[in-house]
Image (cartoon, rainbow, N blue to C red; front, side):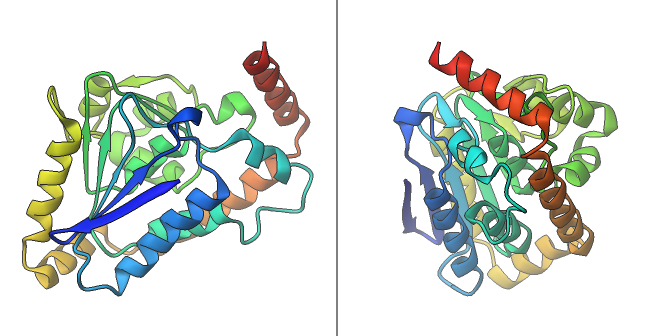
Length: 247
């Protein structure tokens, strides 16, 4: 589930499915999307903060969701697609607090954040290619822009894990926090929320630039990702993953 709270202009979205390492379900994607969408028109929301649980931000998408789409014509208007589009259209500053694993969409989500704080035990990984898939959330465009081609290739294609320090050097993380990472991220979110909101919105929009290319890339990734779900090598990778998981 997603626990949503709001105080001092900060809407906190806390991933709370710790027994499954915060693996994201359709309902969780829907809740996240609705929170971002409603925040665009809510003047009381000046910043979003996304965080997880001790030792786990998220293990990424629930594999069961992947399997139910395999063999179908596409992802259509599924919750995950709604969430990816909501990320692109999000108009409020977005801050993330990472502690522990941030896998798959837990990694690509960070590229949409304005500030990212991580604990030293954070580990970021995107095993898309290992599962026969392709990067998502616009990361194939944002990753090279943010980190350069070589670092983006290492994370998104090789699927190598980035430690908190390596992610900081790559520009994916703003600050590695030795103490309470949630508190540090909340303090930053409250600092953002205290700024003049119109000036903040205009400044953020200038920094982000035209998001049309990003929107187009997200849609292209969705199409390719959906087609890959029924590819033989993807099905084989899923089977190997599930076999290893139940062994």
